[in-house]
Image 1 (cartoon, rainbow, N blue to C red):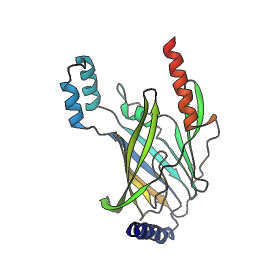
Image 2: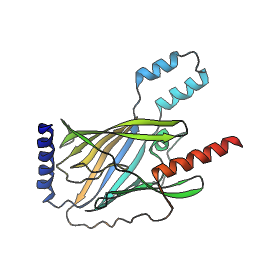
Image 3: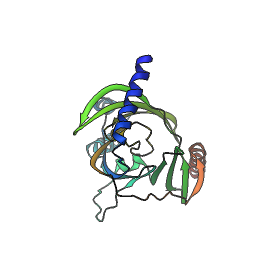
Image 4: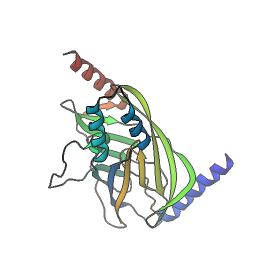
Length: 246
């Protein structure tokens, strides 16, 4: 326990030393792909109670799940994570990656520790108040590009029409870039998240552009029905239940 406290204190000290460089603004591009458990896919293909049509669809999706490109804009106190706008449409068929990430944008205010997910669903715009995750810091390290990164883990409870389940999340962050933000609603680590695994989704920083002087203005989303994540899940379940009754 004492060893972990010393290690965590060391990380925040290192991040504090780098923060003297005043890296307060920037844009990080992330490429998101999917990785699958090959053993689970093999086991599924051997099941007799799964139709050949379903197996074919799953295998096709595994071979080409698609990918997505998102960007993280940040200044000293705030960040926005949203999909990069493209002039061309390259998606063919179902892009499972985009479906898994979810719609809309994620806004984070570091000072108030406020995280908002603005998205359109069921014909309405919602402004969802998302709770912050609690990280477990470890001493495991690896190199990502030229940066020394540390591993952190957390778990997130997710709810859909099938019920509640837990997603395991692994992040690799670098104190060499003392930026507390990351992809989606993940922040609060003593360094920028360069790589993150959320269930089957893999987020990788593909381009890092930080500035010492340029001021980036982050616009806080205000449009939409304000709800907590729990309230949104209840709304979604009720709408889906009513739809199935029709």
